[in-house]
Image 1: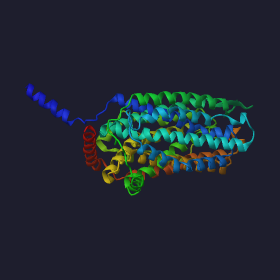
Image 2 (image 1 turned 90 degrees about the vertical axis):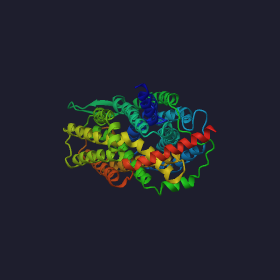
Image 3 (image 1 turned 120 degrees about the vertical axis):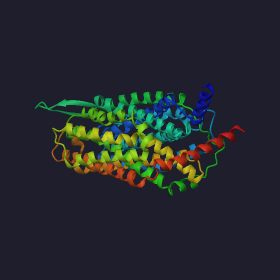
Image 4 (image 1 turned 180 degrees about the horizontal axis):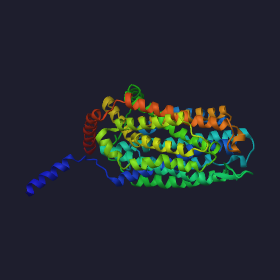
Length: 486
């Protein structure tokens, strides 16, 4: 009997992945994305409002600012990818050190974005130049920490279950970091005013913007350093990497999985960014900025619920399959909202739609980073080139490109429907406010539909196709470890 038990134990040990990780490491990685989202979500959600309503920069000029500064990312992101890829690992790893090196610079850069420069000058050109400089600085620093952080997941473990665990906990971290600005900031960055008839409206509070940015700055630094302290790189990186970046990038753009990943990155990030325009809808259509809080809960609560079930669902159905189902669900709800537009007294309908969209999108969000790791593995197996940071840099750029398109299109549409300086001081205005509603319902309907079509018909890495890729990567990693040991 004892002999049989020993055999069973040995078989179980044999089956267990050598780089298996647990909840503790997942929580450590979670802290890093919470740090990311403390600064990124606040910038994505509030900066355009700060520019138009505090610095009084015209919407079309803000649109141009976002377009020009993010075009720099076409150089900046691949540059960071090459820097990280070619740098040999240190004692504490290849990617982890960036968490401690760039934590303070990225957090401070975010803080400077929300400084009210009009306190020092009334010259609109100087105000605009300050906005350009500080936003470019933030973008460069954010890429400098986000590329190695994202690449870190592929070297913490090569276990498929571990990858799903990291993606799940990253989603939790993103929820924590994203929820803080979306739930708390609306209470601090607006002043409430009462009209003679008793109705209310809101205007921006410059001091509130900066104070909340300071809070996000401090929290981000704490969480980045905590992530550094609680993670470990298990998959060995080459001691002297000689990576042909030209071949690495060439291989990416011949890869169907990568191309679909990049395009979905544009759409996913673009829609996340576009959701921030709901702030204009709440302020100038429903005339209740506290709806930002309810709307954020409606979107994040389904994700918090589905995080409990997604890992098991992924194991049974696969990431592509689950993301395709979820995006179809979100697309249907978004199309419904566009066709049956809620009235000014029907904000509750809009909230219900956001909840349904949040349920569908949760499958896309929770599996997204595991999908990135799968594409990294696919590229390695098909090209023989380890290019975690290069792939992640291009994917980061695709997400920034999505943000750029969302902000440029959104701000130009706002400008076209009549969002002028007058609208920063009032609530509802007939015609203009209905135009804002149209913008905030049409774009999501289009975007979620495109995401569904890509996952359903274009992304090729099904559950069955990934199994042999995982096996090849595992064998290769074992060979690298043997060479390192020698």
